Structure formats: C-alpha cells, structure tokens
Length: 312
Image (cartoon, rainbow, N blue to C red; front, side, top):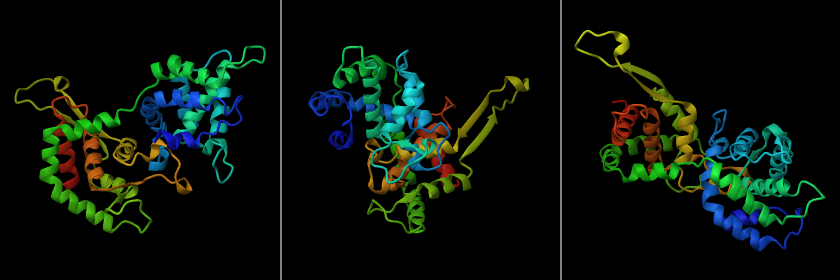
C-alpha cells in the first residue's frame, strides 16, 4: 500500500525535486502506519456524510480540524495557508474543476498536504535559510502530527469482535438466518458492476434495513423497582444508533482498505459488504448502540443488535 500511495504523490513543484525523493520516501515510510490510523478518524464527516464515499474522503472542514488538533498553525502558517494547501493537494488527477466546497481529499492527497504544510511552515520567508522538504516533514510529524493527531480505532474494534468467544458464538448461532437475509438483499440489489464475486449488499440497502427495523434511533428504558421509590432515583438506560454511526460502521467493516490510498477508477470507492463484512458491521453497530449500558458485555451488545435485525 505504501508504494501505491508514494507513486501518486505530486511534489514536483517543490524546490530540489526529485533530489529529495529517497530521503522523503524513508521519512513517510516510517510514519505510514500511524498516518493510516489518523486519516480515517478525520474522515468521519462533521456533517455525518450521506454515502460511503463521503465517509472515506476528507472534506475541507475536516482537514482544518486536523490542522487545529495537531497545532500546525503558527504566526507564519495560518488557516488561510492551510486552506490553500488543501486546494492544491486536491487539484491533481481531477477530471474537472471543482468548487472549493466540493473538494474532497483522498489518503495520498492527505499525505501530500502534510508535506506541503511542513514545507511552508519552515520556508515561509525568502530571508531564512532554506530547509529541505524531508527535514520539514520529519519535524512536523515529530512535533505536531504524531503527538497530537487522534487515531482511528477500527482495527482494534475488529480484533475485539473476532477474538471474543461470545461474539463468535452469536455469529455461529444466528449465522444461517443472517446469511439468508444477506443473500436475499444481494439478489435484490440494483444491477451495478461489483468489485467482488461474492454476494454483496450496498450502503443504501443496509441503511434501509436498519431504518425499517427501527434499529437506527434513540431508545430510553427506565429501571423498574418492586419497591416504591422516587422516579428520579431509578436509572435510565439509553440505546442510541445514529445514521452517521451506522454509515461509519459500514465503511469500517470493509476489508479491502480501499480508502487507504483513495485512487480508484472513476473516483469511486467501495460501497458494498459481503457476508463476513456484514456480520462485522452488525457487531460494530451493537457496540455503538448499546455502548452506554455498562452492564452489557461485548457479546450481549452484539447479540442484542442481531436480534433487532432478525426482528426477534
């Protein structure tokens, strides 16, 4: 994946290109694993996103949140320059010119944006000694990005789900009816070219399922007591699953990691789930929906969500 990303970077307008390539390659290679965790966190659209594509790309507002979190701004590098970097980085490999509000940043453009920010922060004046790009990037990564950026925990959640014996048991018990449901949905999926030879369902079908089964929403249940006590002393349990979190569970459950590079034919990203990904997606939704109920174990949350889906 790193080499695929590296080949897409376009820093040909930066001074000393391509002499710095090998050194910059090594700097980015060392930080690649952490950057792949950072990027998806900030892609969780501020507005929630309406498609899987929006959930896998970074908008201008999300880029600026990243810049703020990492304390990149300084007297010499302000918000306006950060916006200009976003526009420059998202101007390559585009079939048509876009308004600034419509631009979205793929992973390789995110890495390029970091490089450009780093260079401008160190070389903001012609009167200062020139700092080579690799040194600029290394300094910004070490001082700003790696210490302060928030990481995405989707891989840790995946490991938690598939390593939990109770969750695996739930998948085994309810696997047959869930597989039948998934296959039926796949059969009724609108005819589109798929990147998988397995039965798959679309984001739209999945969201429709979650809404028609009343899984997306806000549920409150107050604790009951056989003893007469003031109502306000009884604990309130809340189960919440928003459309935004349901969409993100869909994206996080995809195994191909297509968002990690973000360069796909016709600009399209994966928007489908096979059966194993569907199971994981339901598990993630269970963790989201029942996460505030401390008394429920991981397997209890996943099982409850599965029962919701099956209408039991």
